Length: 618
Image (tube, rainbow, N blue to C red):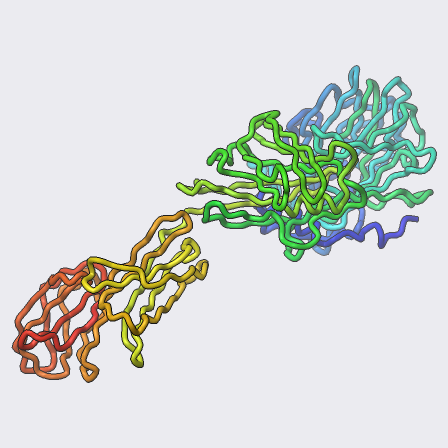
């Protein structure tokens, strides 16, 4: 018997990938998770209720199976949808048991049904000339959660689920080879020894692995090793599969959710390749914000991004065509490529794309645009890609938008898959969320003396959009010259604080800062005034800062004051002036009307400025 430890030895991260994918795509982040632990799930006739349609035999019909399994105290139900029917119809076998239906034949009597079990999902079908296929979807839900209005329930996630499909053979007619198709599984087992009748190929239109019979003969034992396929799901919520045949006539299918009988001969185990853009994280996907033009954003973090048991045939890179709104400014960059390292993402169908030469390997690139999806296929013209080559290619991918006039906001979602015959890997996403950077803003700018040094300090919001800061001085607040420049610290989501000590040989009274943004534009700070006030002065204004709507202000002059009080802006313009004869230390100013900014309150006596108070208005 096949070793159970090997059967389930798949990365727990595969479950997390499925969970995160479903969270983002189907809004099921609150789904509960239950461990089936390889037990059998039973689709019993007695628990079957047709919710849409009378017998499940038409496309769009929905059938509810209650209590397919109970895990702990939780009952699990399942909604089975007949998604589509192509060139065939449901048909009972010869001599059917009374009360049975072909959508899910429940008896073990009738022609060819002796090994059938009620717990199996067993559709019996008659295919028209040339054969056809039927697609089913199984959605697992919490027990008793089915809503008759929406025809849905509370989705759940099931872990460690085996699915056996038996009797993949033929009906004896020419070309009547049957097949089943599955996708998203963690591994598969089937007989590859001499005498096995299963061949695995990939069905690209369906994006599933097809397990087809290599014989059109009928094998009488339903669970025969030679016509059996067993697939394992580390995690699933919605299970989608296809049954079909390549020729006409009767065909019976037996889907068993469980371990199934022991193998007579040890089967081969095949594991699909796995992609992971974030090896150290909990998700296989990666997300980043883009707020700066002409800056590469890598798809993958360092680590093992590709795991495969065999060479890779093709790497698929795809996205919604409508996502690309900045034209040729949006690019796929292949870092370190010596040729073909930049591909504009507004390509058309069958556009000529240059070969990519990376680390000595040449990759051909084919462009396809169809049905609103743009796709690039990377492959070697001769032979397949080794794991090392595929790893280098995936880890070299970056997104770049060089539209430095204005990045168009919005989410760009890029998907990657690799194909290793006959399996497609899990699908991973790189999401680049282009945001409009808030205008770089000076939050606070001060000039002051401390321990004999003249110091400028300023705080900046959205510092990550700045390249550098230029300090300028002036004697008259009109003509400025450059003193020095500082590089941006590139802080995100927090205020960046800067300090600059004015050289001792500079005696300017006025200063400003020029912030040069990444796109070359300039943001200019307010002008500040460096004034050496009387060190013994204890004059203060309160409140300080004041609100923009405040019309009154009090000044504590520390002594009786008689003279003129001016409020002056940073350019030296007097905005408020009042003669004061105060016999107390508190001076009242009324009738103010000031805009947001920094102002200087001058207390003048005998035409001499003897005190200055800095006033902030917010």
